[in-house]
Figure 1 (spheres, rainbow, N blue to C red):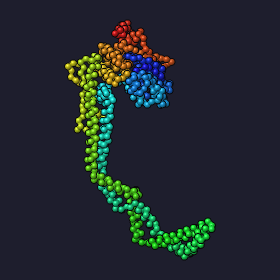
Figure 2 (figure 1 turned 120 degrees about the vertical axis):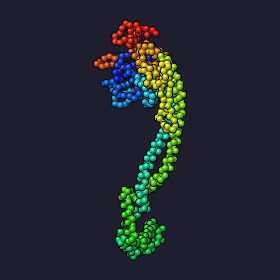
Figure 3 (figure 1 turned 180 degrees about the vertical axis):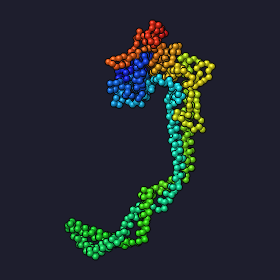
Figure 4 (figure 1 turned 135 degrees about the vertical axis):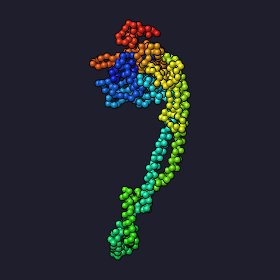
Length: 548
């Protein structure tokens, strides 16, 4: 139950606080006094996205605070205490804040809480009855939890199917593109394969060619170096010197260190001498081989330049092109297998859709029965109402975002008349009563504690208005009902009646709200009954309405 609402610096409202009570609460006032602003502030509490344009001119922020009392059932369900305070702050700088009992929460969490507490009807909601795309929502609300679970299962399977179907279409499109490229790919593959590239071959060729280009220089320097070591350095004497030091190494560590260095020098010179000798032995210049190497390097470099890739990258490219060609040759088989996968995923999604459809058809029968009963209380005694299902068969290959059903509301408002589409035959007042009936069913089915209705009685007058007022009063025994209304009959049935007005203060219009006493109620209802001026007859009529 909504206990209080405090609104600060929100549109025309400077600072108001309303203490709400149980039962039927009616807010009345002339057009433009600010009833819609109060409703908008309640929308903020019920998780509507904030708009800083609603901040009162000259203020830095707007604040809306609501206090709710929760039943034990809702306390357990939401894991919250018996009293909760929700505050929305809208800051001009964009720093919007939501708190629950002084703790910051997200908009998503706020919606989770308020969806369990109550529901708000907008004036535009009546227009939803003109759009059959919205009808499934009414059916689903009969058992929101179960239907949402079934819809979630269906949507997961549908998403898997749609992803696979998209990939299949891409494969088919790619196949057509790749087949047209096959000849070119095969040409590239043969051209690269013809070179028989080996990893790091180019670098090795460049090294060998560089050596052969300087053959004479390398040969002469190696020979001279070898001759100097062999003829000018007496390495045997180095060895003998080391041997002599070895005999006295125990007398001094310096002798031992000198001995080791001479031995190391001896073996290193021998090793260098052997290496130079081997290189001289290996050294050979074959002009024909040299020319072949240069030709090979030229061919590799030419291919690198053509493909703008290194030789090692061309080896990888060759393998990738070979795979593409192989895939093109096996496309039909691959696509056939993938089509089977897509069909399997479609069947899985369709089966989930069937389960959802059966659930909805059961709920639709219950929904239709409840609507008829509600409408009887709203002076639509002979109404026939059915929910017509168009369920797509499997071979239609249709998976809608909402399931496999499209539905229509069919109604006969007069005895003897055939069932026709609701959106085409119902008048404004009849649509208003249908909407009221549906909202009432939703509140009861979902065990809500609060229902807020904004001029749901538009287009209704006379005897029907009295019926609607009585129905609202009856509903308010089950949950708190707050109504914005222009009907005097509704205002007269209220347990709590608030008048909304605006006046000029300090050259600015300000919205005010006040709980009306009996005399004020009589005057307010009489004004609602009058065209322009307040008449004695209207006052008597107002008194009569309040006595009923």
